[in-house]
Image 1 (cartoon, rainbow, N blue to C red):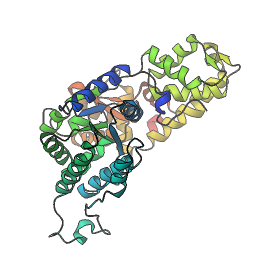
Image 2 (cartoon, helix red, strand yellow; image 1 turned 180 degrees about the vertical axis):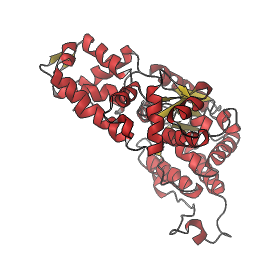
Image 3 (spheres, rainbow, N blue to C red; image 1 turned 180 degrees about the horizontal axis):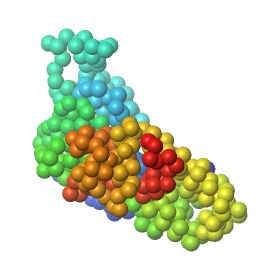
Image 4 (cartoon, rainbow, N blue to C red; image 1 turned 60 degrees about the horizontal axis):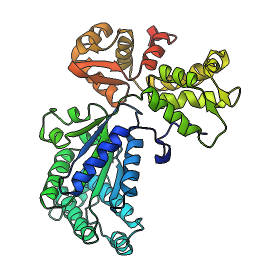
Length: 386
């Protein structure tokens, strides 16, 4: 199947050329001794993870022997010690897989991680506190030790990429530790390049937008919807190696329906591919009742219904209120429409953003995560009974 609903492999990565070129420039600055932290910001399924994979490939393709390590966080990451362990174990695994230096490979393979590991439900309470130094001590010490060894072998920089970075807001002290440790390492001449990826409000969720943490990640890349040209490239790359061709008219229709959202482009094209009347497919396929039924009634709508059911009863009322709004809506407007107290509505909206159902845009206004979701909620049977 040429179309996928999971992050695309680097060889099928479409466009984002501006972000890639900027990434290369920032890596160059890091290599020269001016480390450049990056924050990749984007809504649900807009390609943040795929971009990290592409960045890693671009870094490895260069002849400068850069080490790039990608870490995915999930809600099970409980505390600073576990967070540090995850990063160091992944970095060790990535270092042990390099092929250009036998001695470096041996170093990473034998590198010992000494961060205390939580034991049982008591966590670090089960470890003698007198022996457990702050997590930042182990983190900085380990990273400095690694840098001293790799620098001897001509490694110009190490990239630490953290996906699903919103989890950091749930780990007390993780953001401050990340900033403080890497700033100290920068001052010590260690050329690490931290990269975090998360929702559009990631930096705002770190605290005030002008806080030290937000300023630290001052290189921000906001992933917008695909342009028509980018959507065309995505589809062409997906169909490479097949005998199937989507005409320009069909690409334009898919782009318009999906609003340029990478996930919905893939989802719509997947159904069209599986139900194509011929190897050359044009826009008339979308006039076929059965094809449209399979795209919406059998694929997109059940998918959106499943996402809708993640919301509580109060949250559903807010979603339906947002669906009735012409464009975006303020907290006051949403709470009044849903007949929910403003304070409670604010808490519900925060949870809906965590569930990737709502986005907060500028000036404190909110909108549903995609226009197709709005259309679905407006037309959903029994919408007033939820």
